[in-house]
Length: 468
Image (cartoon, rainbow, N blue to C red; front, top):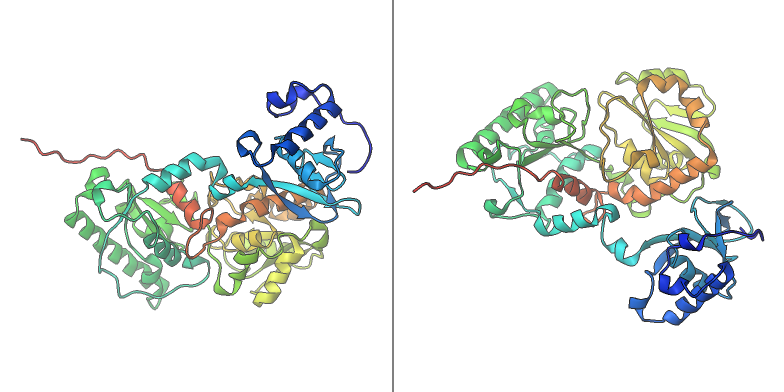
């Protein structure tokens, strides 16, 4: 802010180099001393603090979060001072350094929000940098080859296409090895969605899928010794269908399942073993992953409290939500899918997007909402949300038990503008983890899933020894 109030600061709290601070006494002297340091720093990077990038927001500011004021003639100097303090998360065009980056609209100043350094932006998963580096060096995956079930090859689109997309990206990834003795994991190449969708009915398709999976596993166990090394605990497979880890039943109970249906009520899904997949986008919505449409629309410009469009008949929660909120003036619910352009407009006009459990817990609406800057409201019991341990869902979404459907409006109206702004800001920080790029890119959905897999690598193997 440009208010001229005095800000006290304990010098010992400032995270600057003591060689910079010790000669300085008092705030004004400290800032002047620091200015001399950063201005004389020049190109000697070894003597300088990390230089950060900043996101520019015109006529936006932070209320009541002033840190110190910098008397300088140019914004580059203010930026360098903000670089030097860990407490500084932003600065404005009036020279005030900020300890918060949650913003609101103002006509008085422009805001510059500190981003990760160029170095840390190029190294993925800032909280997991060490683990990510180890993964890129050490992860090796051996893929079994089989011709069983190869005739079933329908290409599914939409969120369930993640099964096909993941396999394509895996085979092109740097993790593949042709030496099973150096493998961290073994990939079982089943295509459960293809088997199921190629049948005349879902029931027949599931029966066919289970038969094919059984044949593939029989081949793997008879022709290769690798399964017996850990009884399958270092093997993984993907099944992006509602049947999820039930596709192999007890046959694959030790292996890691990459699934959409990550439901605690599912007897075959094991949370500490299996991985919940972030949904893929349908082809007509893929543009959202390129420009993150709606990400910079402020909450005040979103005139719809909550929005949902789609099937309202399946599952145990959608019919109740539809009946309760059908005629509400603040919650917009459609009982059918909308044309793509209309759907995107509603996503961008709404503050909250409802993710209502259907027949299963999974929904591609999660990714669609995130990429449009619409805060997901997840009404579903027992959903093991995707990418846990990679993202913190409480920072950017509202997770409610199904029984709260009748209190939904009151809960959403209790969210303050500041809280909503912060959640929307967090969406911009995490959205890339939900994008399935082709080819895969650091920070995206593929590498996020692979990092989760890597964290499960500590498997005890029993390999036979040749006894003389």
